[in-house]
Length: 211
Image (cartoon, rainbow, N blue to C red; front, side, top):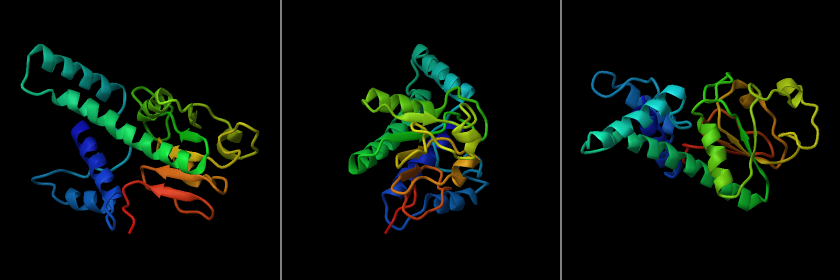
């Protein structure tokens, strides 16, 4: 599963930088080859491999590879891949922040959509990477933190994540985020490609190479 997710996100990055391509079309075609190559499960560009089990098991398998002096530490490579791919998304957010001067808000803390499960979450990894680079991004998850009028009846106060234009990174594929109405002037970075374009908001659907 970890290898499939890493490959799907590698394909997403290739397509994002290749005009006229669409990672969802690439993975759809690959998914047709169920006998020799793969199945559709976990083969979709998004955030990195995650969860309590996957991240823990990869750390343990990487340790085992070193203990046994194996020829290659595949599990360690998956860990490095997850971190590098998350750093690339951080780069996109920082570039938009520098372009617009807007603060960065990470939407989501959980690793699994529509839950409050945060163990091994790539959304938390993204926040850690941004903090390590000196960007203290606000982070909000309606399933973990609630509010923005209980997600979202939307009577906003200063300091709420939607109280003005921001650079938003959708780090968890919660259904509510597809229905949010970001303030005009905002940028939305969407690794899942499920946020629809809206007037006055720049939506960056990662993995869709624009002509």
